[in-house]
Length: 385
Image 1: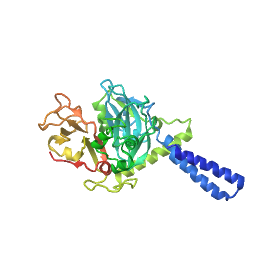
Image 2: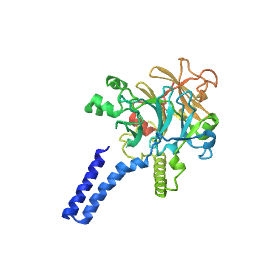
Image 3: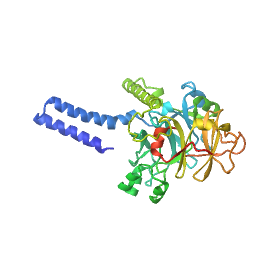
Image 4: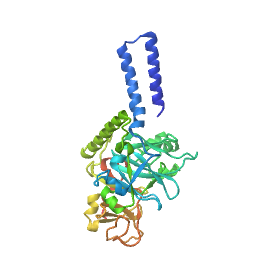
């Protein structure tokens, strides 16, 4: 990450020294060459640092009742709850679009947790972050995209990994070697990871998340909190250049996400084989138990009796249910092999009664099919009971 800007800076310096000492090249050629290096330095190194400013240390939250004064109630939010002491927190997609990463707080075990979001994949994922062996905290920041999915960088180590599969690919590469690593196509099996003495959540342990509208969140969790991107919602008018820049970046990001959602083709044409089993931009709820991967669509669940689908995944009994009152699809573990007949509400209660079921933590809520299938092509789609 730092070598390329170092080389660019050295090249600019050498070009300038050569030009001013010898004048051996025409001024237009000198200006073009140095201008190219400066553009690459800015666009590849400087701009990402200010364009995608994560909120790891200064995440802003407002009470649920105040959120509707700032945002539309139809806004889609990603929801999580990381400890018994913590409130339910909602992350509006529009607010997380540019930061990509925001601090949630501390989990039950006292570890930091971060919410990540990729607009190109339409995917929010929460991770519980372990400390590194040297005691440093993992600090995730957005780096770039690959295969229309966010690449995350740990600032403390320089390690990188895809958001969607949560694997520290730098560590995995060192463990399994280059040739073996490339054969995994960034989709290593649990067996490969076990042999490498790594698990699939090396970036962090994946935490349960679910989607709903902001209005339904406020009604369901009246004491909850909502993340607000401060530099989007509260621009500093004393810094007009920065404010204008932020407005321009907001527009570019929002247009890119709009095109991604409405066009059948991905914004970045890097997906070689788009799985034809579903429309490319169909939003799927993908999850896995071990190496058994499944993707379901909302209509598949809602069209079933009582909005309930039962299935066995990775040897575990799973129920997928749509809560009409909360407008949210949930995927739950069931302790019994007996099929669940009644709808499971957003709190995990079957028929709104009894003990709450446990959410499946690996759910990718509403991810675009073309991206999800690229990373998990072995998944089953809408399996019958």
